[in-house]
Image (cartoon, rainbow, N blue to C red; front, side, top):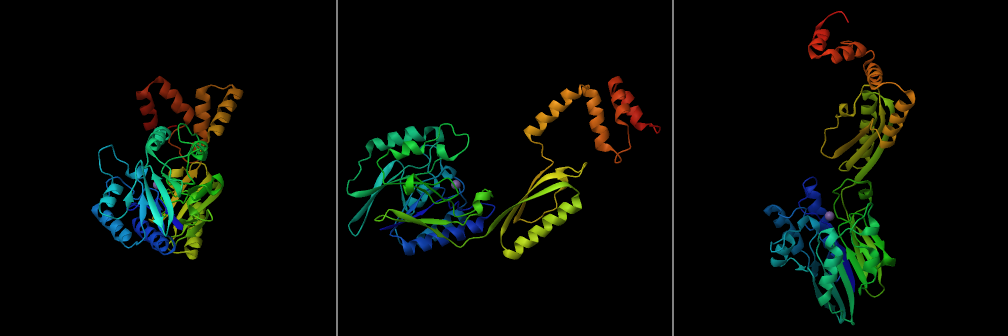
Length: 366
Ligand SMILES: [Mn+2]
């Protein structure tokens, strides 16, 4: 049989709300044609208490799907124990079967799958929660056994701490392990571990420029393919400048936007500008992009930790006083631009007192 694996639809995602509905619908309707069963790995909604309009749209979309859907909740809709999360609510409405710490079986013309779902739990509890949940799990020797999770994975993220690991998941009695949460498509353990990625762009990260879609899994051949869905294009570009003036930066950024819009007028665009702007021009001066589908990431004149350390080292080598250094820095910064005061005089007056400083600033002969 064929399984469709869909995840992270983020219904109601405010920034690209319409995309969240349209692209999830594209995935579900296509999966309905190609698969016998659909597995939905969490983050159905973007928030734990979605608007009624969002709930309504989600039900409208999922009602069009004829094949059975088995779903878990993600971190975006997780609520405290005893409270109803919106994925549970959809299950009550009959949109899908909801699994949290339990297994369900599905039979297609005599071929069986057994699905164990565990919705998102705090990362540091994932390992113990899964162990505990599996205490009552009775693997069916005649079924293909599938685990569905929505967690971070130790080996897949930087600075990992207490996340559940692939190493641990690999030892569990499942033929297929499906995970949501991570928005880029990914497979590990020789295809035994599958992440389909999100159906909508949410984080505007470079890796989200990859096509959106879902995974179609063949239970007999134990192979999978990624099925691309029609979705809004997302471009991510980086532009580097060196001592550039605001007009030059503006011109180049605007040309880049024009060029990308020519490729696809409805595209979402994120441009990271980095490097250095002309002395005296701060990065906050660059605020000229005013469109809701273009995002400008301003890293101009950003000082890295390495730069800062090198500066401290230079100061030490120069063996000059902090005051002398401040005067030099300020003189360099305001050179030919601000003639209201001389940094050296200003510092001298500041040492004497605020009255003297104000007097100095007011006086004409500097
Ligand atoms: Mn998500």
